[in-house]
Image (cartoon, rainbow, N blue to C red):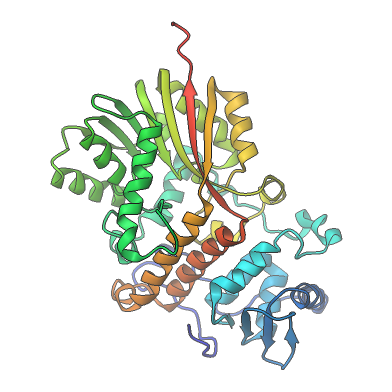
Length: 422
């Protein structure tokens, strides 16, 4: 990882929007008072953490641990002072700070997320935190834009760091540490477990909400299921159609460019993998009612969902985050409590089983990040610049740190629908 001096930020030469709205090259203006307060809060917070923070003015902070190098402390303070944690990520994109072991440093920060900011300032969060823009609401039109922002970047980009299954969700490993050659099998193991939970066998009518690049649909169809799978990504749909055709299963798989709210019909089983994170809190009841309405009596739904602590979800659900601005517009991770309450209050479904696999996601992300980092030349050849590469590296490392610290988790849910006719 580079420790060079910060460079001017650029955009992807083909289309700046597809590059993720790169951060401004010049840090935002901030009043003396705001910078002074930010400096004091950060010095207090970083000073008590198990980190080694080395500032360009010679200041040293932290009690020891992973190293963080601030190349432009003034810009770092200005970005955070004006844009909070969004500014923290933007400062990394700008090359204003680095860490020899980025995941280790971010894991420390994630592990102390609840107490980094003093309680009095946390109570004033609504006064300083950035608000989620209305344009990112997950209405049917908004969802199409939000999904396109991420998934229509380039199929070739995702192929750079995903394994040959093109599965973009947590794998399920037999043991740790995981290795790259085991990733494809671990992805199949995860898919098979979800299909087993949903009871997918010969003749099952299966609805998949969130196609990805088609691996789950292919695997379900190979079992003899008849699959209807929904996506909002043109890029994903085009490649999924090719992959299904190559597998000789296009007579069993119907891939629709369709919002989940537009789904029709009744199915024996529903599977949805890491889809609820993109739904938005406002539409969680609609999402789960859709599962209920599409599922036949006696049917089963299997979900894979990333979750976060309930108190942190409540504290930050109206805040605009770095991930939302640059990676997943409109997204929000639910808590276990939020999932269970929404299912209970808005559907006839019942949460029958829940299993957690957070450590498996940390390993999955590590393998993706290492692959992405090792293939920088391939990313560059696709037209993505250094700022984008730093953004994507930060995204993968930031996510991995969330799972390593226990701040994030990933769940397999089994939801069942009672057959009242029996």
